[in-house]
Length: 115
Length: 113
Image (cartoon, rainbow over the protein chains, first blue to last red):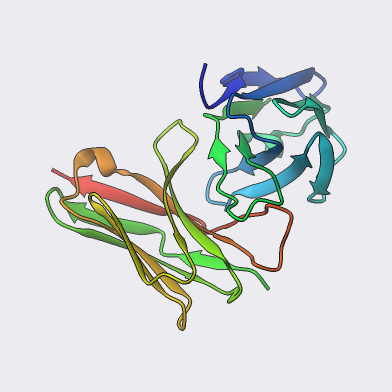
């Protein structure tokens, strides 16, 4: 595997379910990100991790719970979601937050539908 | 504040040049980026430009930066149907050490055969 991978690619869940999204990067990076992409809205940054430590939580509701066990893996645990949480969830990675260039490399995303 | 603006839609004919424009607000931005998103996929980094450059060319892509006007453009020469996608510009605010990129809302490029 190369680049940034995300599983599952598609997920349908009810409002009472608990599920997790997984992201893995094979680029040797140390910073990882979760974004939400809804129709007709700009990309919304949700969380940032640098060397496994969370550095940014962009006022995300607590029904979204991130976890970063190591620099290569990032999870987003979901529980009691609302239909308006349906979106494409994108994971990205970059070298680290101290790098001069912050280009981020994105995974293919998980298309989430909340019924 | 930090803000990036793009026009929402551009339609061109195959073989023509496409020019996608972007304006940003943070004059201390160090790097500016162009990403491409095809249907059902994540964002793919196309190119970037450092803020002390005016132009960067990479095969069919030309990036122009007018730092005085805070205007960035992406020109695609000989546009092909495979170039149909959403194009995002993004800035890396100079004042930020969070790795945060500020994205525009994306320009949908439609290439007609």
